[in-house]
Image (cartoon, rainbow, N blue to C red; front, top):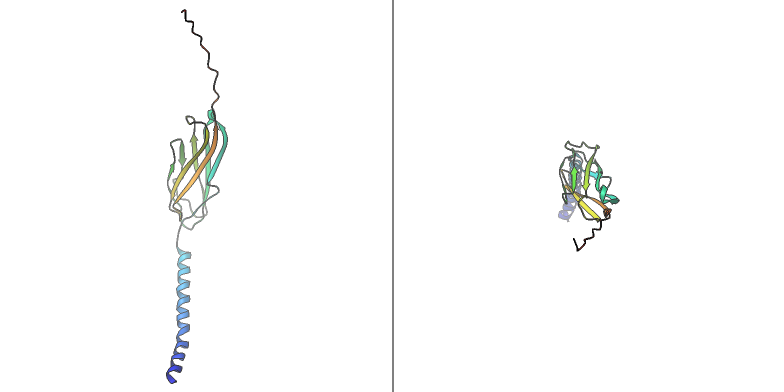
Length: 157
């Protein structure tokens, strides 16, 4: 009986020590999370729709606005478009935490076929989400076809 009582008392005495150690470890992990520096990027929108546009005016521009919502500097390393008709322009300097920036995109559909268009721009950053896709969409109307003059050929000539 003495052994059982001794073991129970020992367990009661040791339990708070384990609980305190578990709480200390949890607090330490939460502190490390708060102190860890990371950049995070949040876009106002990830798709821009140009709507319907004429083929004669198919040189279009748009902007994708974003904010660094992290606690470290944000760097945009690269931006790739899905085709040569789309040209992105990225910021060259770091975006500080809480600051905003813009990615400018130019679409040149002058030599493209009319109809629905959807192009993607892939952004590579140092943010938590390292690769982000942005999209431009729209519908290009056919070019106005000028009336082709009719030439008559006289077989006697």
